[in-house]
Amino acid sequence: MLEAYHDELLSCTGCGFCKKSYYAYEFCQKESDYPKGKIMIAYGLLTKEIGEDENVIRALQKCTLCKRCEKDCPSKVKIADIIKSARYELKGLLPEHKKLIKNYEEKRNIFGEENFKKEGNEKIAFFMGCLINKELKDIVISLFDKLGLDISIISQCCGYPIEKIGRKIEKIELDYEKIVVACPNCMLSLKEYNPVHISQFILSLDPKFKKTGKNYIYHDSSFLGRYLNIYDEPRKIIGSIGNLMEFNENKEMARQCGGEIEFRVAFEKEADEMAKYIVKEAKEKNATIVTSSPHCYSHLKEYGAIDLLQLIEENLAL
Ligand code: SF4
Image (cartoon, rainbow, N blue to C red; front, side, top):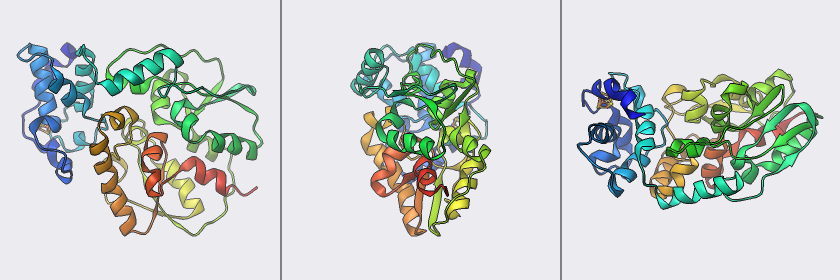
């Protein structure tokens, strides 16, 4: 409820420091494109000084909730939580989001595709989510084959993208001792099961890797990083395979690439501009981008980015 953020909203001084990281992008043209403007809209909705219309819906949805702007806010305002809460107040939806929600409700897959399922070990499951199901399913199957692990593989939408849009989701019931995930959205959605990220799981097996001698630059997913505080494990794996490089803004300060699916389907131009910003730096550093989120991977793959799952699968020394 937005009401719960009343005091938080009032702690915004209107200084505009949260706009700093947005100056790199041309798509920011008006105040509502920046976090500060969205905070003002949320406050207006709460006090009923403004009503809901198409511009309000677009302004509040035009945000990945990545929390990067919060790093620049001197008042430590919980900007992403406020924006997400304001979305729950909205009755209207963008057409692109209506489609995702319809697919989720009908097929538990935001693309409306068939979910893959493999029964294996009853104690441990890899929860694939719908983006890995779409983009990296064969890599996952091959990876566990190569590791000699007959684990169960489940793919269905975790619901987190729907939740980010501001709509309630159905709880997922799972009955395994251990859940492994590779998508930060799934990890957040399934947090009550204490899931393990694939990078942590792989390191726990103490595998050996082939050395490629290539330059890799790690793109921190905002959700794996700022939300889940997982920074080191993917870097450890990448550094065991090749030359680990860093973006100028990395870890807690990493930029969002625009890949979050619910953002990207509705704001293609903005998402492309965000992707090109980091791709430019990777090119200048002559490095291949490695992601550890299928949202980032599916957005950046056209620029030659690879996912950590692929890097591991290709370079396991068996
Ligand atoms: S930086 Fe923080 S306090 Fe300043 S305008 Fe943005 S949200 Fe408000």
